[in-house]
Length: 137
Image (tube, rainbow, N blue to C red):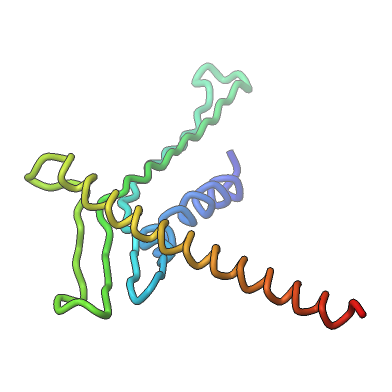
């Protein structure tokens, strides 16, 4: 295995553990921001061998893997007294508590997004009708 192959493989695996992959893309809605946090594990090994018997037999091998696990969400609420809250997905409490909290937040964000989409659609419809009235004699 050439040094270039090892370097290329390691470079590819190291891209997985960049900060952008650990701290997720923020989701914003009505004064609240939800930021997912993950844990990333990475393993890599490579080896090269040659026959001791003097023959020209050689062998090379490499392997690697990565695992991504969501561990928490950071919730920033500009309107609340406690503006920043960390909601862990793993805690001493039962997992159901964390899932319930995240589900409620996700549902709230989804409902707010749907409401904004509905309002935008209504505005587009009003604009379309207004243009039709102007264009049509």
